[in-house]
Image (cartoon, rainbow, N blue to C red; front, side):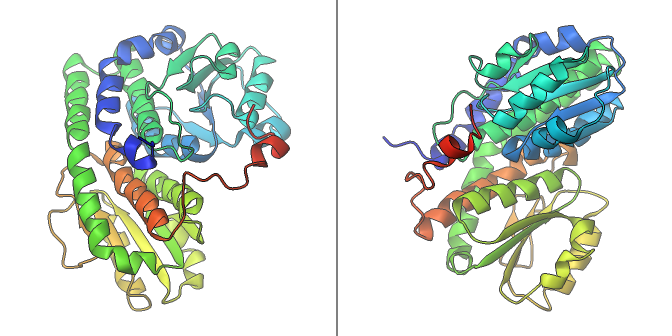
Length: 356
């Protein structure tokens, strides 16, 4: 049977259960390196869905470890970064392990005495040769180019890196640690429910969504990473104009391009910022009928909304909120006639050397 994006979406429950179960083994190399060290901060080198996944997870890690995490584009880092801090932890994230720019950035860090960790799902890839400290994302190989379970797995793995290191460094109590593990287990337990609800939501709104010529996703906090992944996934698969924005970012300029043709998706996790986003949505609805919310709430007066009816900590909410975006990306692309199994621009990687 041909594997598709939907094949891997349906594997997210078992994949994430395995990542959680095997966390001690998969994170041992990282813990051995980082335990007891006081870094000035972490710098993550990643592009595309890997960078989006870290954007989703970094707020959890920053909070639990009380550190600052920067995400840098590897190619910019390699060519324009003037200083590498010896007391910063560098983390290179690439699911497939063959990203040219990430590998180049790792080589720059290796010229110094700075610590670097590779985070990948391919334990036989080049990045594993560039660092003796390797974290296995634990999602296995995705043979379809539009990653889904790998995105979810990267979010979960990075969250667990923060949680496990906080526990090992005694920044949190044993009781707090196991309560966090329980929260994550509960979130994973909802994955198949979210898939089912997302499919019904898509089917209900399909005709309107298929007619869309331009899409926008808006989120706040960890939801910004989901909005960024919507940008990446819908651009890759649906191949129509698409932008993902942070809530306040959208309100400082991008709203000026608003038209009645815009389809706007709001990522609504339970947060002190949700009312500000509701206010924005109410305003935008004066200019476009096509607004949707992916929300934690039980009910909504708007027929466009996907109401998950799940109480979940905002900091781990991307584990569930990214799933409707993945469902939308796959089925909307198929229903628009994009055969995702047929590779387009097949000579791109060869000519541009974006993968090694």
